[in-house]
Image (cartoon, rainbow, N blue to C red; front, side, top):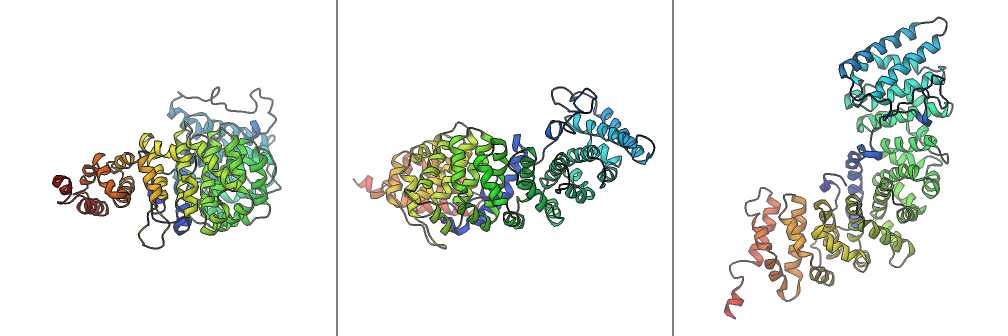
Length: 532
């Protein structure tokens, strides 16, 4: 989940699925991009070895696989950065000279100079990108992408640009002059290795932010990347899917809506989710995440084409964390669609619905904190829906796990779980109407021991978590039969927790906490016991 969960959440224990689902999913799609900078799902990827395993797929007879740069073998980790930068500046000058040279062996001279620059940009933990830019690398690399150039030259130039694009934001923006040529070389007339390397560079550019994504969309990158994703297998398909997920991630929904309308894209998504290996399925799942987060049009098509069932099957059969995270999040987006979609999709007793609950519970039981958190988020989407959806969770195996986790899990997981449990206790409302209690659920949850977990959230410094905790305390005070809620809250030191807000800087929380204390624990509280 994203760091700022307040951007991603419907108003806790008040709103139904349909009220703000589209807005929540759209905001989530923007925020979630931060996480893809980690591990195998990074937003930008540094290229140390060539596509298809080597720079031209065959080697060049130099005895090193055409410069495959293995991080374990050839990466210089302790070379002085100043020396590397000087070498890089010199390599750019050599490339300029090679481009100007028109004599015998000119092509091989250019390729050798490009390869040396590429090696330098691939060697260090901190690539000398700034030195390359200062030496004037971009214009000369763009020149090397000119039409009619041999594939070996195109591939090396695109590889250099890929690693420059993986740098800092201002370094990535330096690629603006190169974008039209990179897009041109992902067309159907290009060789697969060249097209894939150019797609990789474009994926890095798209991963930098909204401004560059919009430029790529306006320059026509979407259609050729989409066509690259259509074949059945291969690293090119995987790279194209990754670049597309970066390109459509928002906040503008235009890219997502346009992508799903391209002929063959929906069929390819279904086919890849059904049959592809886990690496390709992971990238396709990220495409589904952003499609379902940003475009209601896309969401409806994905639901109608059984993508929910395919995601459920992947969750049930895979143990890959890299795959499970986007699959689970895509599933959460789809079940948080508009009200009609959700009611059509989740029918108590149906095979799909039973499958959704079963795989989410599997993730809830996982040892991985991220999966627990994502699973709770999916359940919170369902729990904020109709009474039937609330009962679906309430009667499932998820409930005892949720009650346990709200008190024992890491803080971020407890906060997600609190949304689920809170939403189970109130019926859906419209507008500003006060949520009505589902007393049976409330009594059962409190009896199961969840109240202490909510009061701990009230004590936290996180204002969102404190708000959810206070809202649940209000439900307990108002809804437990025979006034039992007051004694329960007092027994768990809930009064002390609420009094912390007496002079709190957040006016909303201050008024909420003070109002509850005044209403339920005012001067007359305890008089009946004293009289007895």
